[in-house]
Image (cartoon, rainbow, N blue to C red; front, side, top):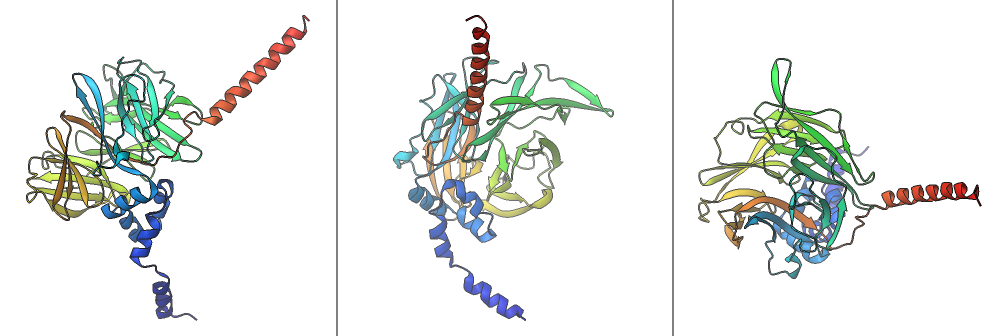
Amino acid sequence: MVTRKTKKKEEESTTLPTDMIFEILSRITLGDIGRCRLVSKDWNLITYDSSFIQSRCERTKTIDGFFIRSLEWSKPINKFVSINESDPKSKLSLDFIPGLVSIIAATKQGLLLCVDDYSFRNQKYYVCKPSTKQWRKIPNPRTRYFTERCAMVVLKSNPLHYKIIRFSTHSLRTIMTYKSMKYSFLFCEIFDSKAWAWKKLKDVVMLPKDEWLGFDPVVSASGSLYWLTNNNMVFVFHVDSNKWATFDLPFPLCKENYFDPMKLVEYQGRVGMLCKKGCDIQVWMMENHEVWSKKQTVSIEPAKLSTCYPIAFQSSDIMLMKDDTDMIHYDFRSGNSKMSNMWTRPMEIFPFHSDFELVDLKNRCYKKKYVKVLARLSRQFSRYLSKFF
């Protein structure tokens, strides 16, 4: 019989030193790093440290930063901001896509969803990978409704399989009554890269009257998509089941105008919240089953950033903040900050992580199916002609 002490000694003897784990994980590709984060909490924490992210970017030829969408003289501007701006790899743009486009969704695997700015209703949709300058036009949604929010999720990297979730509404934002309560509703359409087509869900999304999804980009975590609503509720859409739900935030997160502002973010692979009050920023994290806990409080007074607002996390110890026309990377462990001038007011911020490997955006499954249809039609036409000759 093996005693508990013997088991404990065996576990300690088989545990790798932290430095060795760091060296091994920093050489793993972007596609495999997500699986490694599921091994243990220690591995997960290591992979979100700023020193690890910088080391992995250098060793695996990956890039990490943010795409900032703004307007200049009514024209869309998409600028990439990285803490390592001196690195030639950080010079990313969307100039390779024909025309003027705006980013509306981003993924953790380096793909962006963009739309052109030439028309308001019949917009063209593009999926692209800026690091390799690849792009592909996808079919337009068939509905006549106006786009409210979009999100994009990569389900598999090799072969590439992704989905796009689009919420739309009628121009009059129709109100319906259900069980004596008034609701506004959204239509939901999903584009599947395997089927290469949009599919409209039968069930509509019902939100309480005067409730709508926030303007900040979606937070993707554990196969679900999260938005913060205008009344400090959280809307979640589960990609695997196509189901949605809303839930309230705990006190004081639910209190209106208690924080200025509140931002739903991804924090160490989970859903987090950045809440500013005075010169302090509270970092909250959603644990299992919608249970929230405050992780830490960060003071921005020593760095003289009291007029700035938190936006997202670059890593577990570096926060992205914005001023009127500036983006600031603030390392709250060391107190150092780095500023990037945008020259225009930032409108939306999209976290971006990518490698430089080519991907197949043309969807071979769809192409094979199309070739088979053409071959069948050709055979039928040949048989038809054989009756006359």
